[in-house]
Image 1 (tube, rainbow, N blue to C red):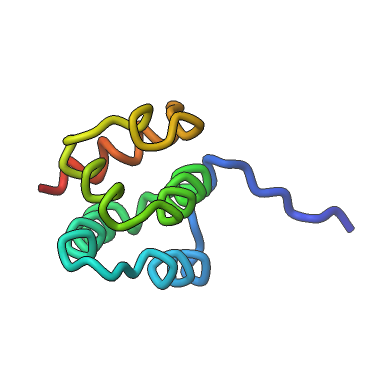
Image 2: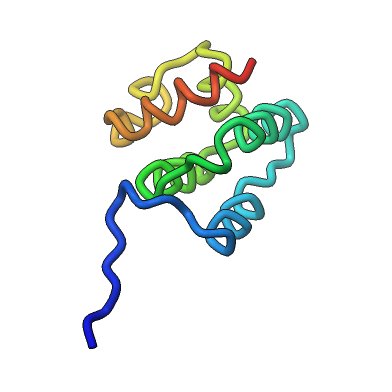
Length: 98
């Protein structure tokens, strides 16, 4: 029997989406509002690659994350190692929800 291999473009299943929502809970209300709007808009179309990038962004401090969401700082200013297409894509998606 072959194991099922999930690619980065496969959609998240309900369990993975639920875990990601839990992981994205923040201490700063403003961040929670951005993230709630993000999930309202994208929860049915979020793929594994995007979810992974969002999960990594959640390791940032609340203040850095808010600066990114509001475009007050760029990824290269906050965390240069995260300045890639996947993270830029997630930030664009979050910013569209404002």
